[in-house]
Amino acid sequence: MQKYITIYHDLVEKIRQKQWIKDEMLPSENELATMYETSRETIRKALDLLVQDGLIQKVRGKGSVITGLNILDFPVSGLVSFKELATKMNLETKTVVTDLTCMKADGGLQSKLEVNQNEWIWKVVRTREISGEKIILDIDYFNKKAVPELTKEICEESIYNYLENELGLTISFAKKEIVVEEPTDRDRQMMDLEGFSNVVVIKSKVYLDDASLFQYTESRHRPDKFKFVDFARRTHN
Amino acid sequence: MQKYITIYHDLVEKIRQKQWIKDEMLPSENELATMYETSRETIRKALDLLVQDGLIQKVRGKGSVITGLNILDFPVSGLVSFKELATKMNLETKTVVTDLTCMKADGGLQSKLEVNQNEWIWKVVRTREISGEKIILDIDYFNKKAVPELTKEICEESIYNYLENELGLTISFAKKEIVVEEPTDRDRQMMDLEGFSNVVVIKSKVYLDDASLFQYTESRHRPDKFKFVDFARRTHN
DNA sequence: CAGTGGTCTAGACCACCGA
DNA sequence: CGGTGGTCTAGACCACTGT
Image (tube, rainbow over all chains, first blue to last red; front, side, top):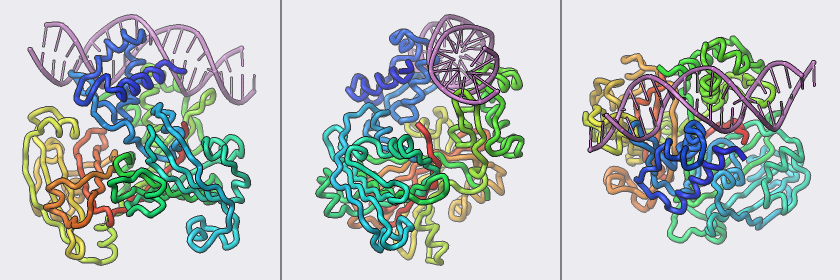
């Protein structure tokens, strides 16, 4: 493992364990370089990741301040999978597959997955548990033409890893829509939603490199643990 | 201006002018370092920005590939607020400027707008009313160095029209963050929030083409009238 | 003023790719 | 094998912050 990644994980862990708390200063870059027996530039690469995650804020001439953001306010940016995020943040996570069925598309799904009636699709329902709390409910639909086989084991690991490395699919782009909804009965049943009157829903359509739609997903998040980050280029006019 | 930012802008311009086209290789990092008479690490910082923008893709052992600049040509991401929809649908909309003041940056704003203490900034607070309902609360902060003058009339019309056409500013890009928060007292006071226990907050930092931050905005939405659409490219790793 | 983060340099070694 | 990008080092100067 690269040194700056290791240091990054170590710092995330220390912040999680409140070794430094909100509004406190991180040791200076020179101090950290000495502590980790490395160069300042390497420390800076690790700190860059903390800044990207919103965990610290750098102030010129002063130092790096802990922002006190909850670690679990993890960003959903681009097409990042749950597994990648969890790994990146070194969090204790658990994925439970509660439903894995092969079915024919009904009316609602036909339009969402842009398939014809009677086309076969996979349905996967998974809860995502972080530090013991069920925070996310993912409902995935895959076009069986693109994904002929799925197992519970694959769904518990990273589906994307399977798709890209085993099946050789190339994911190209996704269209996303974020809305806030009232929790359904299933949401209340399968997530820890006590006291919350909303869920944040990310609806995604994912396309392959031949521009064919192969996945429709609803990722339902508890609002306090949701954060979306975006880097948008100004469009002309 | 920092060297790596200058190089970054230069490369963006060259890509825009099709000096290199889609699927072509950029010169290697060593070549670029020679061309720009700088070190390789500095070139790498410039290339990092191009990667973040999705303009190039780096491949270990091969080089940097131009991914195509459609990204610069059409919107990859945007916000569809109910106000914009309402305007398109010819609904009755109203903007009310409730606060327009010139003030010095306090601690919180210093970091958000990345300015020094005692720098002057404009604060604008506006409510957005659609079909008689106050749905959106916008709080804008502008760096006075970039925007020396603002009037109530300008704020009631389009501020951006004024910035780009009157002041000649060029907006380059924005960093956005979407979170769900509990309504503040001001939210309840200035918006119609009966029965809603959350607001969706879009926090934006807007940058000019010299990469300087000139605006920080919080756009606070009633959750039932909120929708965010995004077109995302695959981000590897 | 001394200390901080921001930038920059000129090396170095590595894993990977294509010929 | 040579060239590529990925990482790392040990310096350096700067602008900014506090006291």
